[in-house]
Image (cartoon, rainbow, N blue to C red):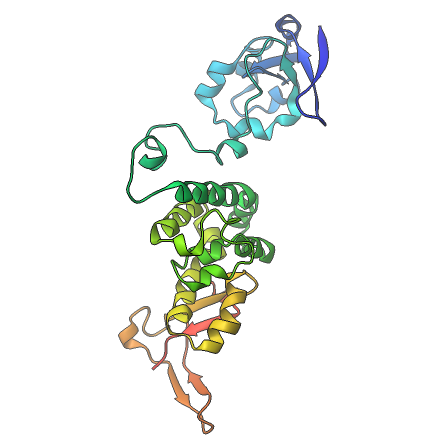
Length: 308
């Protein structure tokens, strides 16, 4: 009644008939079907959040319709260990994991920008679509697990993830158009858009996708602070700053933050008390004052500081 089939070159999955599933219909031996996959819920039933009995009512049966009426897709991702196999006559391939689905473009009306759902736009072209795909792979894929962990533990993003963001050119893309886009050696997300083609609509695409972790603290930790500190260097920085300081920031090796807020003035720039006085050499400034509540300041390498 069961056989082995291969869903990939390395993974063997049992092929099970509905008749076989129907035999496992008791409290001490309970299998259910969800989306063509067969799960052994015998031990899990006792700790089922919705209660034991309601789960056992589906023992030996297909619970797909009622399961999705009460659960999100990602619930299945948590219990892959309970999977026994797949129905021999299941229609189509096995369902994708939620972690894979969230990286794809949705077909749900209004879940995506209109130009991705059949409407024409004079502002977006194929480069915007490809950039969105690559940005989504990073924010909803590569960084998602770390984002959820950091949000739960109130910790900063890892240096490795920030460097990965720099390697992809994503740190560069959230600074808008400019020469800095040529810094990442592998291009912007592998070259899906050229620096000379890049517009603020491309930046908007990346800013929209960075929200997909649904962890605002983590998102700001990755690039929020840099996004407000680095533009000052790009626009007003001296040549040596642009040559020596900017590239490591763009590549995610170091971070910079914007230091405006003060204990006495808050974000009232007109009320700043911090001063900068040129020293006797005429080359360096001596800065005195306080800065407080600086986004990203706890682990920053460079501080772009507002002074009098």
